[in-house]
Amino acid sequence: MPNLYETLLIVTPEADDEGVNAVIGDLRAALEANDGKVLQAGVWQRRQLAYQVKGKNEGIYVLVYAEGGTNLPGVVKHRLRLDEAVLRHLVVRVEDPQEIDVREQIAAADDPTGNVQAQRTAAERRAAKAAEAAALSAAELEATDQEPQEAQESDRVAQAQEPGEEAGAGEAVPAAAAAGVADRDIGDEDAADDRHEYGDEDEDDDEDDEDDDEEDEDDEDDDDREI
Image (cartoon, rainbow, N blue to C red; front, top):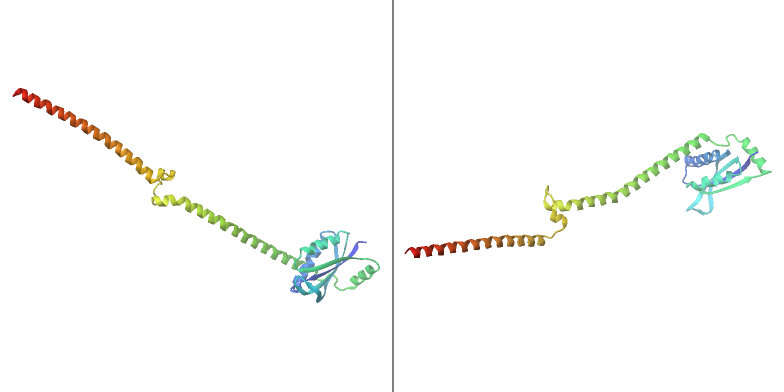
């Protein structure tokens, strides 16, 4: 015969009937997935706590009897630790002679396991709400992560457009400006080129004037000889 275990858990006082059913439904699913079987489950009573637990002064006591292998206590503890609606829990093995009495009481009960379908439905609804909340949180987190990236991308685009905007809309950026050459340097080079070009032209003009003077002197000599 499988071992019989008693689980006493305290649910947060804010939980309504569906919330309590969701806790039982999740525990039932975990036990059934590990070859366990729930024999009886339901609310025992709402009562004041001996001391404050997680900020609560009272709680809803739920009693669950289940049978299964020696792994059952570990399954129960793992499941209930993950349930935020559960304040405290305790799992003990029911042994003879108490086991016989408990099994007889369960057999005599009209509806020992409660409304199983309501428990499973409540558990499914709670799981769907949790998944929806997780998806929403993930979307908000992703949006938050994208904001700095978009800001950085905007800054990069603005920086890339700045040289073009200074040159005028639709105008190409001069190669010298792109290379970082200062206007002062460009002005010096142009001045040097101008000086060089003008200097050459002046020298040519001087040579032409000298040739003209020599021709004038030759003409004067010729005139003197004729006279």
